[in-house]
Amino acid sequence: MNYRLLILFVPLVFATLTGCKKDKIFSKDHLEFSNDSVLFDTVFTTIGSTTKRFKIYNNNNAKILVEEIELMGGANSPFRINVDGVSGVYHEDVVIPKNDSLFAFVEVTLEVNNATNPLVISDSIRFLTNGLNQYVKLDVWGQDAYFHANEIVSGVWANDKPHVIYGVAAVGYPGIDSNLNLTIPQGTDVFCHKNSTLLVYKSSLDI
Figure 1 (spheres, one colour):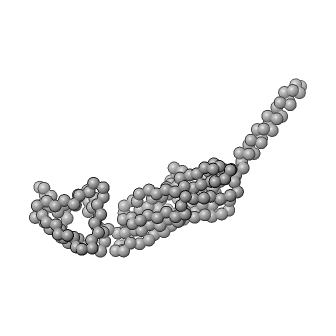
Figure 2 (cartoon, rainbow, N blue to C red):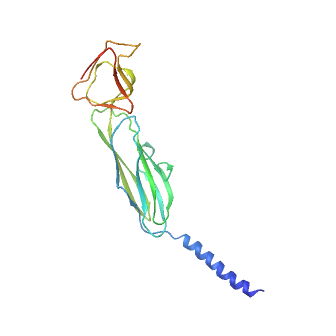
Figure 3 (cartoon, helix red, strand yellow):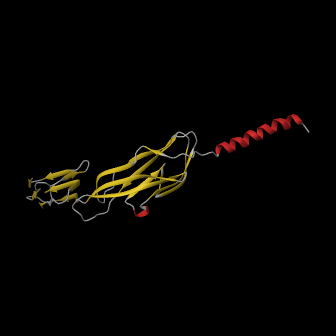
């Protein structure tokens, strides 16, 4: 037997085993977050919100295993989450490398609540790491509204809820109708989506 080869082989095996063992070491610490809450300010029902994000930090010198990430409201929650590019209400065994971070994205779509006043709807995201549950709170102000999307409008707009214009809200329109009147009473909130228009054609608008 070639003893020189044996001597060289043993350190190589030891180094390989040591490397594998080191790779399995996880931090026993916990997570940090860029925000402990995510707030959506006045989202109209049936319309999806903008996307908000926060970061999940592993500020340790070893990688960390997040055993569970859960949207507490589950599939019935109006919120939607995406963790590191993966959508879903539940994620497990998410590994964050040492001194690294992940992005979490949150959106919300509210159902009509038949209420004139804004409502606050809450949920949270639970992170289980090394036996500790940590939470990021989710809150949204929800508001019912009257929606006008590419339609002829006239009469008196109620002012108990906001009016939201998509595309064109037309008080009269060429080749379709004219000599109409729209009254918008004092205290009425009117919102226009991007590139929307309140058009008056051979008609009158009283505000």
